[in-house]
Length: 359
Ligand code: DGL
Image (cartoon, rainbow, N blue to C red):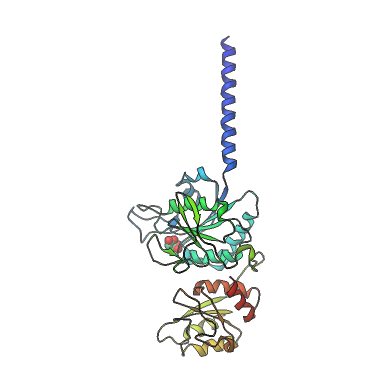
């Protein structure tokens, strides 16, 4: 009798456990599959004390520790983590961009990956985001995220930024919008966002064109979309590239001469972005060096250090006559990225100007 009772109890317990397993499986099956690719930065940084918000060490915490520090993530997505590299982002190179972009494209081609989050230092976050915006070949969400306070700080912004980024990357509403930057509860388009403050948590801004959405209570709300081509609609393909053409930026200011331009050309620049003053103006002492560079085959793009607004073609310089390109509204650092990719396809300034009007 006792034996029979024991068997019945075990059977009931086994049945209950099976039901629990099925419920967990069903719940997991409903959650999006999000891969977190970690690259370093402050979000992975540590400081000596909880009030150390400057003078900390970036890129010390590994991807699994970042995920473990936010257990809420496992309730909203099936998350896997990969440490692609571990650097402070001021040190990121073209080679690391190519490695990251290739990994993103391999993962997004897999049916079991619904979205990707990239944790990244904020210093060059906007550049990596724009590079990926031009070379990722999927409509699935790619969200780049960082933090302004290290993981050890009071009110560290990394955990909530990471949670929000995972929610965004797992949300179908984020698909087809190009690469997104999610920081400080805001959603920005990769093309137009920039780091606007050296240390504050609200540093990522899209000054005149505005953020494209907000994350509230973990849910994304979109209010506008991007108009320039990105991801699957671009003509750039880095799958077979092991390097990118050397493109540099020369920065204009009062009393500037030709030293920067001449040095960059001598160092092998194939393209040169001139961060002009105002509407992309060319100082008289710099202009001859740019003309000489163009005569050597270097492609010249006129951008502006101002940060907002369109650099008008044939405005402050006769671009038609000089055979220069203008950067539209792209910042010098982003114009450099587009020019690098353009030079993997063509040296035609007519074609490159089309690209600056397209992306
Ligand atoms: N060294 C900077 C970087 O890795 C820290 C800034 C940050 O990540 O917020 O971009």
